[in-house]
Image 1 (cartoon, rainbow, N blue to C red):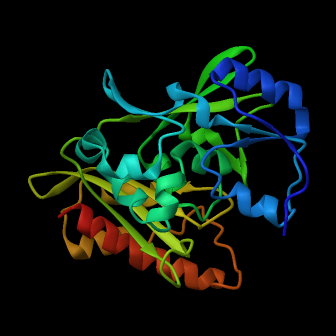
Image 2: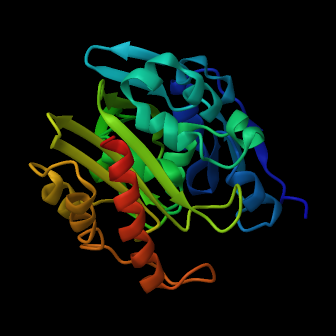
Amino acid sequence: MIPAKFDYVKPSSIEDAVEALRAGGDDAKILAGGQSLIPVLRLRLAAPSVLIDLGGIAELRGIREDGDRIAIGAMTSYYDIVRDDLVKQHVTLLAQATETVADNQVRHRGTLGGSLAHADPAGDLGGTALALDAELVIAGGSGTRTVPAAEFFVDYFTTALGESEILTEIRFPRYTGWGSHYEKFNRTAQAWSMVAIAAAIRTEGGTIAEARVGLTNMGATPLRATGVEQALVGQPATAEAIRAAAERVTEGTAAPSDADAAADYREHLARVLTGRAVLAAAG
């Protein structure tokens, strides 16, 4: 199917993009990597009056050190994230999760900011950003603000982005020396996650000192498994202790039932995958 007619704008600065978004009003749409938006346009499930392409804004791309943070531009592609040495050394879990997204073709076009702003609860990077305590930098007409990942995901496909606001950068604390693992279950290769677990673990002398666990597709938004994290800290990094902690993974979740899986099956998957992810992350 052919998309409905729309105007196309390709600004060269964040300020111009914000102004174009303001001028376009409710009928304007942002184009980042386009891997989610373009299929929706072709099916005419969305019919924006204007499409604002962020691909011409160079300052939205790139990965850099910024004090104790690793800062990643919102238009940085999955491909660049997977290959980057800073990410692999200091935010390993992000590289591991990104490497599971779709296929090489999509990873060359899809962007970190586009994925997070889209806020699909089955997307792999929302739960990962949440587990890693990421901060999201947002630009709008009144200036720039920073929102923690825990406050960014509001509801199903809904974020803290307001009118005429654009996600410009994602900032991650350094997790140098931590173990990490992304455990994903999907029906077929390159499919969306039925359930996935993002785990980052710091151990000291065989004991779990700190734990971060994020959940994909276990609710209307990405979730943090705080019950599991609390149960892990201070425990030996053994299979028995980890599997016992993993039993708490469904606390505070609302797993959906759909054509792929019933809610109770997703809950079962979450317990099994959490045990596997934490075991791998703990070494």
